Length: 51
Image 1 (cartoon, one colour):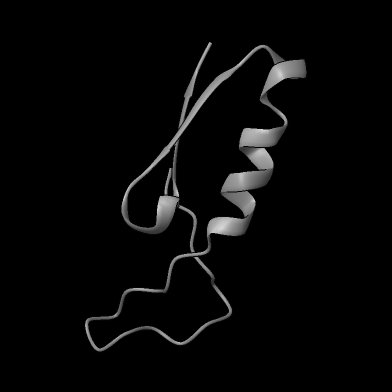
Image 2: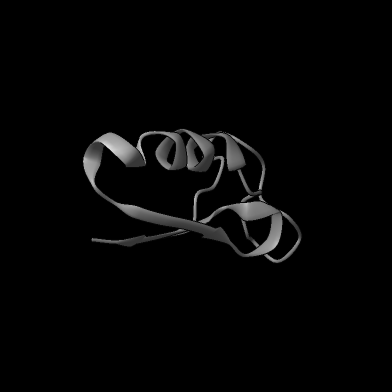
């Protein structure tokens, strides 16, 4: 999943800007949830979850 800032203005092509803050929160919560979390994509806004 890619995390964006929905309240922001889209760029000239209509894409919303990235929001890496929620991705970091998900990554921090992984140990107690038993998840493997990887961040990727531009600005680390793509979250990859594995169990």
